[in-house]
Length: 244
Image (cartoon, rainbow, N blue to C red; front, side):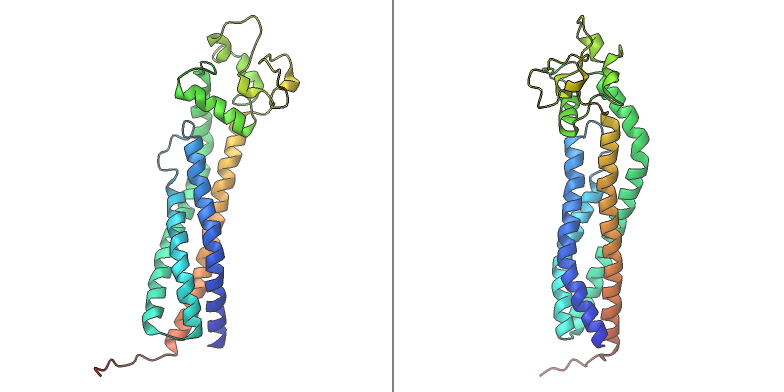
């Protein structure tokens, strides 16, 4: 029983720290979708993030209950703890499954979606949301083109929309330290070399992987907490309710 109490106390303390990690992971998923929603067409992509945030808020009272039960047994609190652990386990496993699924299927979807959005780029001052999204992703991820900067040489991209004697790339491809960059693709040292597809894929996979492992680790921790709580409940017989 003493080991079960220690495990429950340890789990309760870890729940608070894990709640912060899970909440941050969920927020990152939601912000990533908000920033690059033109390229991430699946409207359910933020769902794992919202589930993670809901689970993070549930971990706070769960941690308090676990710590209080480790100090003094209470049938009522132990029962509530079991229900909370079950709900949290369902939320986290759902979030982990969705994160793994979206991460696996995102590669093929991103390639087609990003190619379509980039091919309809109309310039920096365009009112087209897709054009603004292209400039935003190239600045934020410090990338240029879908695969690399040479994508802007093709006739389906900006070269065909903005007639010019020189091949050019959007100004968002220019590195910040080159203030006199004029989109001239001949000066490669002024431009970001890597493509946006690979960088966005890496970011999606990283964020989803962090969320996945946060949920898995928390699930294991909750199973241990439930097991410890079960041991304490087993050694405490039910007490009759009496009217005083």
